[in-house]
Image 1 (spheres, helix red, strand yellow):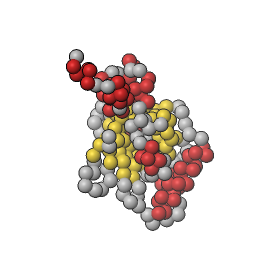
Image 2 (tube, one colour; image 1 turned 45 degrees about the vertical axis):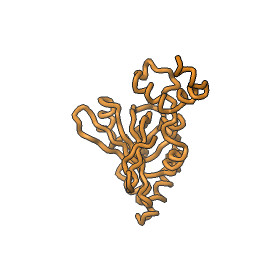
Image 3 (cartoon, one colour; image 1 turned 120 degrees about the vertical axis):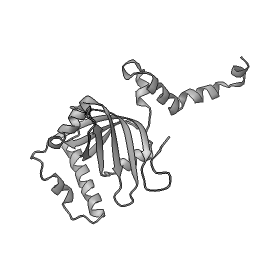
Image 4 (tube, rainbow, N blue to C red; image 1 turned 90 degrees about the vertical axis):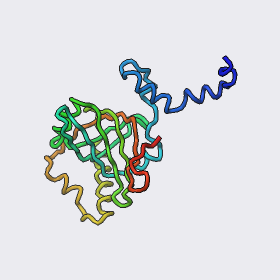
Length: 197
């Protein structure tokens, strides 16, 4: 009783509004039974999201029941729910193993890096293949921006298109809806690999 008398309403409110409190609840309750607000907690800061939306090259890693990892290049991305849900675009014709893996095990990781500074982030969470998509204009803007990133590290003009040239025309995309639960700083420096609170 004495403990409760010493805790102000503001202290109590600030505890329950902390993102860590919601993350603990998300771990305790399955998504099906959770209150929707628990699944909309910002895990990725605005600064990190802005950095990622700068068309950084990235990859999606998944592992199926056979425990064989698969990594697919992410060609475009869109924020679905601020700070916690992303829509990732992968080439459909090279994504069959990723599709199978995500059907068997929804856990995955996304790594994104700046090829000039080597700054990088890794996001972990759950993903599923969805029908939602980005417009062709949004995809083209991403591909143009990725091309500029590649040129910035000395790759010849047209490198992104050359990497995509093996794909059929019109290109078919596979869309991944990822709910992020943890973020790690993978930049090469002391403390690399640390979880970002």
